[in-house]
Image 1 (cartoon, helix red, strand yellow):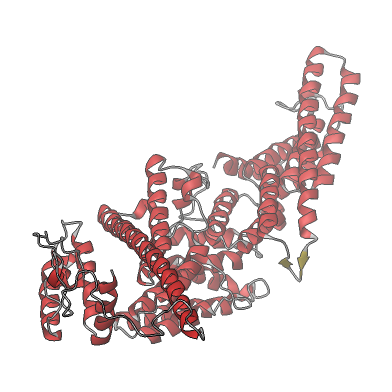
Image 2: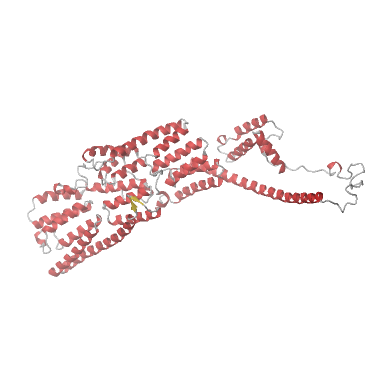
Length: 622
């Protein structure tokens, strides 16, 4: 604010300037103030003008506050502003001029104070040239990636895109006022489908630009990047309070609807359409409406810059209407119709059959998964949840929903993996709630910070149930393997005996048979000569008391019925037990779910006579 007031005051004094030296001094001071508010293009113009009115042999006594090294200082200021704007060659030349000018002045002055000032300005120039050198190297790395674009699209892998984004961020740390670099970063973020970060970057850029509101008087009006835009009433330069985008608080920080309405007018023309699209894909409904209202005021006089606005407005309204319709269809249990409408919304922005990401598309995929689950099409629900998780790997609701779909498909290992991943994310959040690496992702919603204790309890019970089921399946698998091994062994023995019999009967003569095929009628051991068995094993009894073996659990014992029970008895037993052991009626009993699942398994087998018959045959083999 002080810089803005100073610029206005300098403008008034310039009109009544007595000498060219004083005029040069005022332009120098105004250039410094303009640079402080980020108006670097105007600052460079003032430096050029000031250099016309001051010389290296100026007498500081003529202008109070004027430095002997005003010329090198002006060159350094100009070099700094050109560096911020990303104009590498111009900045490099300015710093060279600063060093040369300081050297010439020192030769003429030959004073200790002059030497100190010369060292100061020379040091500033050397540091500036070091920044220029780093910027030139970084821009060369960026240019290598830019050569891989085709028809305005990046033709590089995801890893290469991330590397390019890193270089652009490094360049912006030096040239923070370079619109070309800002646009390049936004395009790379879009390529990675990181729309939330697009919104954040644009809004931080607008907050920086609001500093220069009212800093372009009549003689600088041509340098105003946002002509005809009134001063902001809501958007402030400290809107983000130095919060880094790489922290949870910084990532969550966003502008209000009114602030967004002023921010959209303080972005370069080429960046505005990306900001509007990002707001829509991130479902910032109120902020989109406010931005559209602001842009409609400037649209008539800037049609060439905002030619895309009518189409974006139409997409926004269609998205909102279709989303409301799809949600209503889902609530009305018209799941197939809802699936179709959700799909149509995703096609508004799709490119070559693939969605463009963003919160909107992640939610749409997750909603389609809910519809497929209601239609008992768990395999399609898995596909939709996976698509949502590709957009947002920490989408907690999609992770749980996919685990449930895997459970329905009996793919328990994958369901357990998803549940464990869910708890891993929760543990990371508890260990370091402010960690940038845990929370800052392409999207930031439905994350660990929004999960309540009831959800944690439900998910823990579901995981425990699956792990118990896994143990039971492992026991069954071991038993089945042992049974198969025994069957295999007996099968081999039976096969050998059968082969021996075949060999015997296929033989044409029985040289070992002295009775020529007729058996002698002799008493066999254990026979009384009348065909009756004698001895302790007569009647198939061993003569002793035998302890009955324990009855193993089976589907009949689970339902509490006998093997001879009728189908009606089976149904009555199941309904009675299902009412008693249903999980909804036993919320505090973690074993209720396991019991109910076991009862349901028994019912699924025994309710059908054919499956019951097969089960009876198989269980006798055991």
